[in-house]
Image: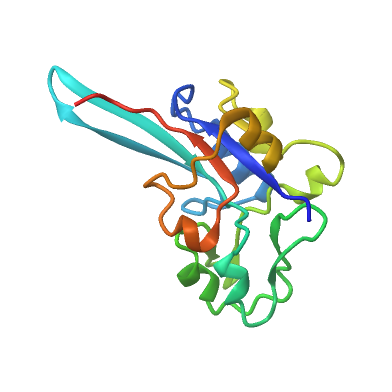
Length: 182
């Protein structure tokens, strides 16, 4: 099976949240609903402070627990590209996907009483286009493509602490993390 995935460069990200806003726009999400979210981390004490950003959508895992535990099959992995997508019509709003994802990526859409999630902009990918988060990033900190090609280009770092349970789910995301000397 082919597998698409994301590369995220924390060293280039400025935390502008354009990717998050573009995702909200294309998915018509309300306040508090985010299929892609930019997290900010900061610490240290003056004058030795540090900060970085992390942009995460669905990791389109090889073993997606959200799909495995969905009782209706509303969340599933596409054979043609490995994207973990959702059939919202099948969703019964039980929240099993929310509880199953170690990355907190499925979101409960209160107005619909159903879950929703990043699908890697599957409709755009089907047209040969990038997900909206990729093309909207002014710093080009997000890249999308065949995960094997991205790993060959950037390396494989699934064992980063930000990706808890990575051996269990095998996320298809590569993160160039910003490190700070202590």
